[in-house]
Image 1: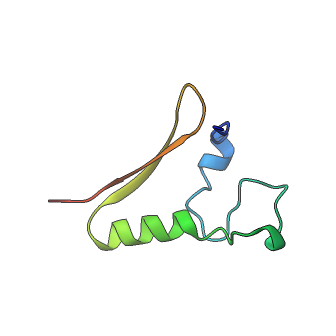
Image 2 (image 1 turned 120 degrees about the vertical axis):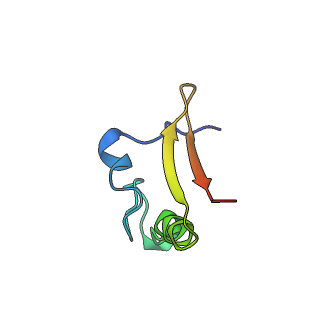
Length: 68
């Protein structure tokens, strides 16, 4: 099953600590909203970057680029 991706508003906040796009979830269902914030922090610490892109057919691509 492929999710819908993220709205533009959610995508602009997706890398913020504790942000959770799925508003129907609560702390009992798992997730703290730190995953993408951690991804970006580690990428930046290594001189790289992280980005998001919605796929046309649904779903989300998270891309991490690190220097060689």
